[in-house]
Image (cartoon, rainbow, N blue to C red; front, side, top):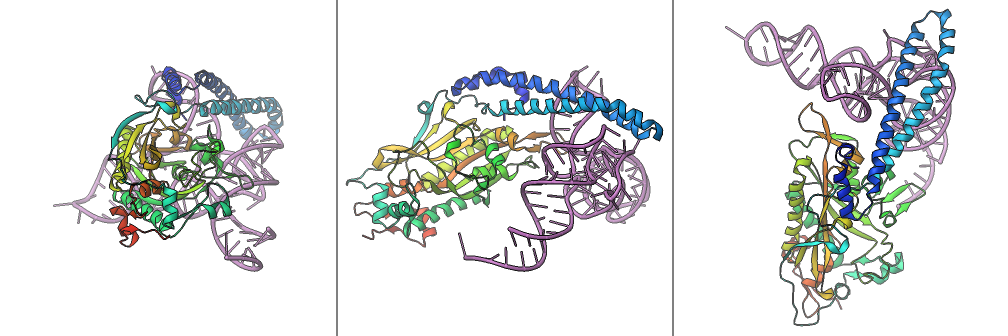
Length: 422
RNA sequence: GGAGACGUCGCAUAGUCCGGCCGAGUGCACCACCCUGCUAAGGUGGAGUCCCCGCAAGGGGACCAGGGGUUCAAAUCCCCUCGUCUCCGCCA
């Protein structure tokens, strides 16, 4: 939800943002009209209601024998109040609908355009080179007894897999390493629900353009989350929290579920694009004044993770049209995947400014006793199952073994090399 | 799955049977001030959230889990939903 005050005072800013996203400008004018209609309807209702209340007090105080006459007199007013109330309710609902159709306003400097219009901020690390034909992550995973796609398909269908043996251990090592990194940075770990109510899913903005990406359990009216961001954003919904002294930082550990609708034929091999995976997600609630700095901080933590694992990567500033509805700016860190000769997204970090917080009603006070204001929320990946792809491919050797990046070894009881099992 | 109890302003509670100065009393906590040479105690006052009108001062409205209904009038009566607790059953 964008700021309604901004809608009234500076709609041109919103129109500009819409243009950069390649989205409709008309929705802005529709929202302005709906706002006007809503306020008129509320005023009309409240005037009538005040009249009715005043009359009610008169009736209560009147002598018994006069009550009947007074009551008869006010019945017509009661009907008008009821009518005005329903008009106001409808106007309110129409305004909400108009407002929720507007995505977040992009931050100045975000490149305009669509998916391919991103700007590369930097490339870091040396792309690995091999004096042998490198195996892709699935070939390696099978050789190492780490990934079993066949049985995943047998049990659950396409895009499902088993992590087996060192594969399972490697994922847990990565996740725990990420968790420790988050702990060192002052994040509070949370293991989150992965089924959430419609209003939470709605509030985080995932039911917009990409609604068909989300699993829905109709019998229970619950959504399976594609990231713990959803639960983390909902954590403080309808609360006034204390972030005046510094951010509230959480690290959410959860399984994530994605339908991958519309991606048939893409990344069908291996665990690049799957229906279910693990993720450790950072989430910050913060004074909006400090949101940009926090965004940089999250990005720095992500880059630190990739660097420590010896992965080559680039950082991109996602174009406006490729942002989700909640994000005002998004940086992706993409690791080099040798057998694809391409960078693939390993992390993403979004500054949602006050957009999510407005929808989910999460506020703070800048000073004790002062007015409430929506907080800013930011999120960012710290590790996911997909990282195994880059780790395996980058650190492979001619014999099919894989050198374990140094930081993960403590989480693997000192294991330094993953050896082929066949 | 069955039976029952409950959900009030940060916390704890009163009010609900018998609808009407109850947006709501009390205690604790909180904030400001006063008093007592410290500590403790005491006194006075203030406190919620959201929305609408207004430059402001201020005025008005909504909110007693949520949503409907009855009524001139609902925390209070009726219905539905959600949640919590207790007991029984079932269970990976």
